[in-house]
Length: 419
Ligand SMILES: Nc1ncnc2c1ncn2[C@@H]1O[C@H](COP(=O)(O)OP(=O)(O)OP(=O)(O)O)[C@@H](O)[C@H]1O
Image 1 (cartoon, rainbow, N blue to C red):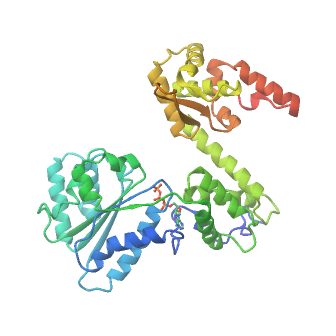
Image 2 (image 1 turned 90 degrees about the horizontal axis):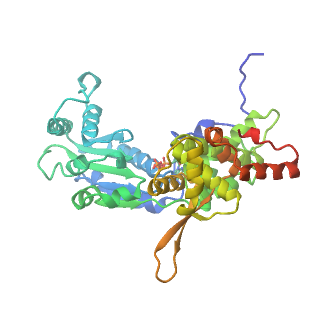
Image 3 (image 1 turned 45 degrees about the horizontal axis):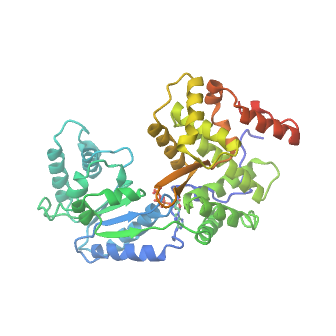
């Protein structure tokens, strides 16, 4: 017997659960696809394309809808001799300036032997190259700028959509498709950029459990053998997905994790609810560890403070009431405590990571509003990622008590598991 053997009992085509898989049809997005299709229709008519701006949270199908429609557009446009369509995809992750976007675009449009250096030119010169290259290609050019919110200055976001109106282009027609999951990005755009870049806006709302269930059923039919999934598996993955963020990517990842766990077990030929629960736990642990490991030591100290206050039933709690605990922990760790406002920034960052939840409260008739914070995550998962701070600060009494209580109920639950 070889060292490696095929294990295909569970999966028919596991790749169908991967990020790069393009489903044949997008489920539950009819309205958005219809609007998007209408916005792209001028391309087929040989007219100047619209600039389209898609926004919505992560994993709601913005990129999938774009790939789906553009591949159809490309195929359908090829039937018309007078349409010469060119598509360019650029993910702006890691590209923060208009200069970087412009040089990347020039290089995308050129062949490999004719690339330009990504530094050293004046910006106006790169723009000139871009206009010359586009005019040389001519025809209709659709440029997709995915994650466009990474761009910190808006020069290119103004110049590109207006290139023709500003007489920078004559032969080429150009349309920009901007995609963003950052709601504040759109609101913060200057009016002149907004009016050109966001000519047609399409909002992709989060999915509900019913949408996610249909998406998962479609994917599972390709990915798994018949009758491998217990009936409750897909509804459970969908329910978790809807509860978390209405994100299809997260739900598909959970289904794949459950499938992988089932596959790892010898003799198992079905995926069950238990696999989903265990998969969720694993994914959550990974997400939390990643989030917490990206924080500074002060972030860890603030989180540890909140965790111990949570164990003492002091949460929800105001930032000013977290402060004494944080100050004493910082001192024990040999660090100067941050000023209250900076400490509060750390609480907000923890909330953004989904580790802490925030409630706005009103201070009676005359007072303003204030925020209260509470730990919103499995205690043991958080603890397992706070190793370093436990070393620096020591085990707080509330934590010791918590584990002593668990010990008396369950026997040998050990703090050393986490520390
Ligand atoms: N309606 C749908 N039908 C089928 N699959 C979908 C649907 N919506 C999303 N998906 C799948 O979910 C995953 C995430 O979708 P997509 O990449 O389009 O999200 P996004 O909105 O572009 O997110 P981000 O802003 O993070 O890039 C992909 O694997 C995609 O194929």
